[in-house]
Image (tube, helix red, strand yellow):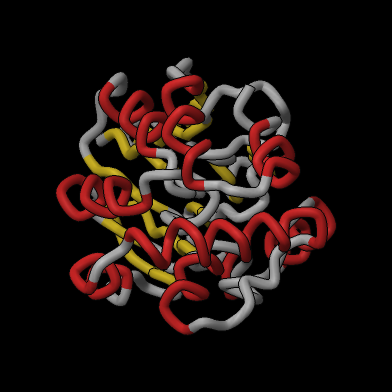
Length: 229
């Protein structure tokens, strides 16, 4: 069975569509942050409602639902707050928010004989943690996760990571932050236990044409634009 694992779509439907429509998979797993930054949060949610087999709550999803801070990194906080107020909260309707409420804080499930733990950020802090190498090693050595799970899936950092063939971060399908402009995702094949990181090209100019009129602050728009070109 081929599992397509994506994370951090952030309202970028054009990138999400290009990645998912260009890939063959049996199940789709979304690790959180459907909203904020991009111009199409509603379309992203519609796509996930129709196509995703598992949806995890991200810190931005939670902020849209609760009004609390997303607690994201300092350099992204102003962009996050601005796009949430001026895009996400203006474009999303009741049905969108009701669907967001179905997202899980974490999931511990078995798929095709393999056991998965899924969270947006970290097994120790599902919404707000940052799982880089030091904490990844801590998780890897934790018997709760090492003995009980074949794979631990997390997102949030917007950077791809594979740690000891067990801890997997697909990067971001909507806003990669390594300045390649190419959305990233992971294919896990449960038949042969292979893990393949992939990237895809998409029409970022089309997305930016939709984003521009929604942002009335030129400085913030140009700051956000650099993640898509």
